[in-house]
Length: 113
Picture (tube, helix red, strand yellow):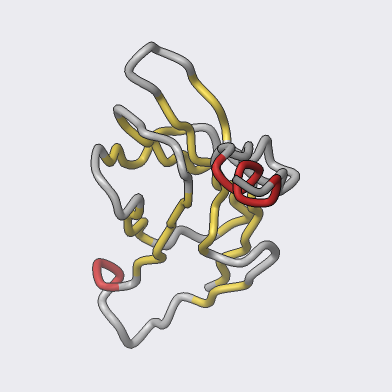
C-alpha cells in the first residue's frame, strides 16, 4: 500500500463550519425581511425553516423566539412557520438518542405588515 491510500482510508472529522460543525440552519437567510400580503390568506403565508446536519438524530426541534414550533424526526429537517409581524430569532436544536442537545446557529428575520 502507498502512504496516500492508507491516509485516504482514515475517516476524517467533519469540517468546522463555525456553528459547532454539527447543525446549521440553511433556510431562511440571516437578516431576511418578509412582508405579509393583505390580499392572501394568512394561513397560506408560511416560511420554510430548514436545518442541515451530518449526525444521526432522534429528533430536531425548531424554535422561534425560544418557543418550539415544530419537531421533526426524519430528514429532510424542515418545517413551515406561519408568518407573524416582528423581529424573530430562529434556532434548531438537535437531540440525539443519548440525550445530547446541541443548538444551531441563530438566524434573525423581520416580518412586516
